Length: 416
Image (cartoon, rainbow, N blue to C red; front, side):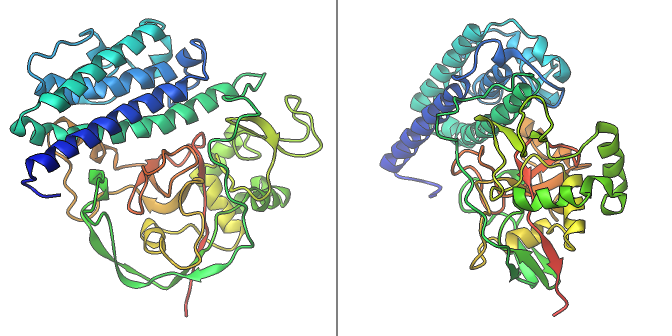
């Protein structure tokens, strides 16, 4: 984009951002619409947040990061919300404890909707009226705020799915006769593709939006390797279970084996065994956003921890790809299911790239301070908003996390 666009181009840019803002904000409300007020207040575990909190926090981000510092004369909807709906920004003040978000029965859901409307009106006014200097400051923050809200749209779905899975009735997020959010493609027989090797470049190329953790673009050296042309399917993973995968410690990393034993893991999260009284059937069932359905052997397996993914790879005589291998292979001819199905665990720790510099100001806390004890995932899931992910996107979670739409793709060394 030109550093000095013409007045017409600048106006078009504002109009486009205003339209995107309206669409993203509306989609959050649409995702919450199938849920009752009770659904939207529940917090099923400390790592998840209530739907109502997601709706409020994404508004807080625009208020605290964009409006309060940059919109002259802005008046907060309720100054107490700066504390209630801050997530982890130390530089922006105190926070309500994360594990206690489900105790926030007040403000009501209706009040949170009014809060969103208040913030939306102020953002729209800022987009329309900001002078050139203001616009240079707020445009990238508004773009970040929309990307941030899209991240929370996925979390809204994964968090409510976990909450509904804790209900013995196993209620569906959406009616069973409604079309799924996005069906996974049927999995063809697995084939091995030769991955790019030698000196390759990874990281964001500077075209369009990227988070700071995707930069700077840099060279890495890859040894020869092969990568699976598709994701591991539910049928593949059922074979691992039937072969004693959850009963064979030699397949597991030590921490993963200890956790699997302590928590009684016998299958991916939300799989229901034939003997499970909640879904009596002679076959495996899977609980998802559309309720309990028969296991689809061809669908990519989901709701796996890193430990389960690594154990499966060991059982299959393979390994997980590094994030550099995954990104280098993104555009290989014949590769399938790289995005839009499940996030794919890699064998890479979430570390800064060489020369990484976080953003300045409060948003410096967005990514960099989490670069320890996390594993990188690549791709994008069925719950990821369309257009949100890209080949350089670095998602990250602790290795034990299994409530997200997380699966795996295999890789293996190639001595050729």
